[in-house]
Image (tube, rainbow, N blue to C red; front, side, top):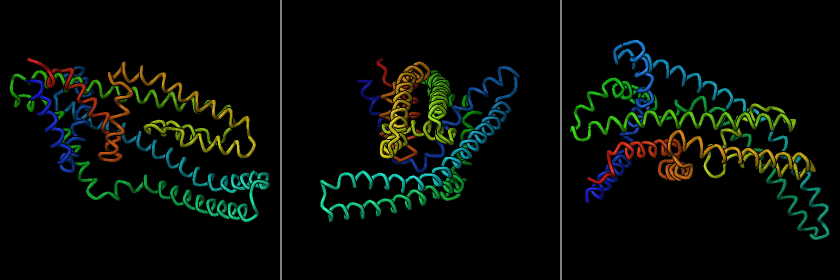
Length: 339
């Protein structure tokens, strides 16, 4: 009976948070950032005997500088990648259409003249529309990274609130714990420590997966003799984080183009490269994510997919973190335990 009541209470809490998500969003972000601050602040306290306030301030500045450098690097490579796509792809579309027309010309014995003319007209329409769409979309993506935060109303305010909430949660965590009933105080502290450790482990595992994918893609594109290796490898590593589809968005059109233009060897090598990248990730992901964070890749995939359908891109990013939080709570015995 007790465990049923706990399930009902936990479900009610999650539903309440979901309904009040616009209000809770900056504080939830602050709670996750406070979990990030906990370990470096604790390390600084242990090594320097500094006060909790000083340790949290130093940790905040250090992590914000690290995140800013990472975001600037990510934005710079993203801008180069989108600029490359914006410049190159429209030039390849007419080539693909020309070879497709030649293929259709060889099949004209099976088509009437009217059918062939209608099909060629349709191909030209698709070519124009595709080139216009690629140029327009790439241009928008190139500017979106610069003006994203400015275009969202209240984003600066929400970020400031999240940062202040994280600072106070990390600094006065022991005080907030003292307000809880004594029966759950120790379990809550254990759950918070477990979540902070698992969050770093999960992030480190994802970083290693990104590095392995990027390095393997760089080697493959180098052997293939492809220009702009860094941009394509970066795009491949980023696409691998998209659930279900992954880098197939890049490799399938590429393989099709190589086959269409008669580059059979390039198509085979590209297919082998894609298969190798998928196999490497599928072999490494269960070990890295499960061993470090204790999450099964299927559970992460389900959480990301469900989060995307519930709250869009925000849910896609944060749903695995909520899954990690739930696992930490369960391991600490805070909920879902019998008497």
